[in-house]
Image 1 (spheres, rainbow, N blue to C red):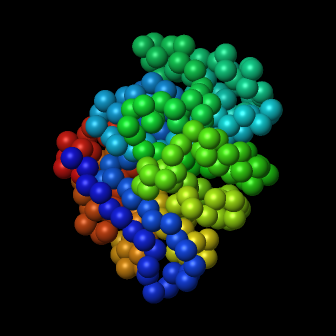
Image 2: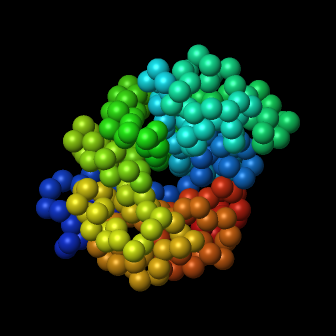
Amino acid sequence: MSQQSTGKGGGANRPSFFVPPLTVPGVIGHRGAAAIAPENTLAGFRAAAEAGATLVELDAKLTADGQVICFHDADLARTTNASGSVKENDWESIRTLDAGGWFSDAFAGERVPLLSEALTLLKALGLGVNVEIKPNRDQAEETTVSSIAIIREHWDLSKDGTLFLSSFWRASLETAQDVAPEIPRAYLAHKFDEPVLDYAAALNCAGFNPNGNAVPEELVREAAERGFVISSYTINEPAKALELRAWGVDGIITDDPALMIGAGL
């Protein structure tokens, strides 16, 4: 059973203005359940639920015509049967692509979903969601605003702890704070030679999501002391996950939720 952790942003070094509360489970499915089903697809979200996850992470990106889809890369090639920039292809062309055959024949024909379709399914499955804003270059603000509009239409934001935003892009987090201050936010970090916790605090984030394979122990402990809820990506080895939990990490973002849950996380 995944345990819950809640933070309310009350650390002494945090901003004095409102920080919405953030709750994460002990295990978070990465792009659905990327070890057992194609990432960022409806099949992947169903697989995460079947594996026992209660919350999944997904990526939100804009098409050429401004539709918000669940997709990670800037280019279509790795996870579809086409190539070319997502930014330069419209939804009518992307919706026809095979987003599952690259993973295995069992998922051939799986489609790239709209964010709205994903949210509708996640609600039906009883899953929470971490929406990572994953903009194309120069579209951080636009992607954030469009994603939030869809979230407001397709999600009940009165239910605390079921949805939060994250991003590596400071402009996205700044825009989210301005447009939707009630939605919890987490600061994603993969470099640790910068004052990342100060950046997260200045952006009024309740969460800190570091690369768990690179983050120093002392930074995790400082983040916990400062009141951040910590979710580390992408951890697929139970021993590493347990080490991170001992340091103070609250949620383990993993491609294999069943493996982590089976390890007692």
